[in-house]
Length: 239
Image (cartoon, rainbow, N blue to C red; front, side, top):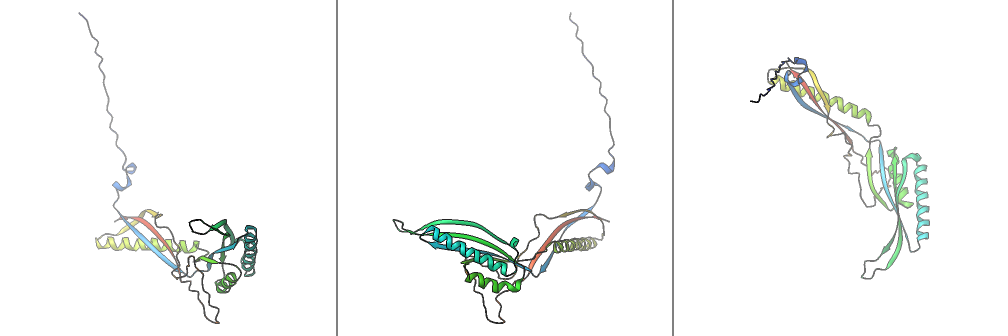
């Protein structure tokens, strides 16, 4: 007769009490969460011009030489207007052969194209500078964007106003329910709704020439205002 050894295991079970402060904070606090938004409208103090320069000729070297002469004149005009070299940027140089759209395409000319971005910080010079640039070789004004140069202080101001708006909203909502708010529990800036800058003026143009009035006392510039917005999410304790 065989004998079997049957092991016997004993287990000890320990119960631990988790301190309340280590539990999820939301389980022991009644919170109200609100969103505050604030927007500040500021008059722009600079304008960014994206300009196009196109030169054409059946001879590529001639087209390039004409283009270089135009570009030098445009850069000189910008510097004469007091614009610093760091605010004058050339890019997107292209040289293409242009053909007709006939069944058998015919060579028409070589086209040299380049884009110049100029940031003008003195808006009083906008009209005169634009007229000069158009006269000296700019074929297109692709876009005109009015901006605020120093945005940091307006960003901070908008954020503070958004926080105040959140507190006012939470106070009013809690009072309606017979409650009051306590200290803030969480404060988050809404990165999904970042600051944005948008001119309210109809100041942008795309792929067309801007007509600039030169009559005395008449201005074609309407910069409007730039909007700077901030949004925050705040949770307050309910008391």
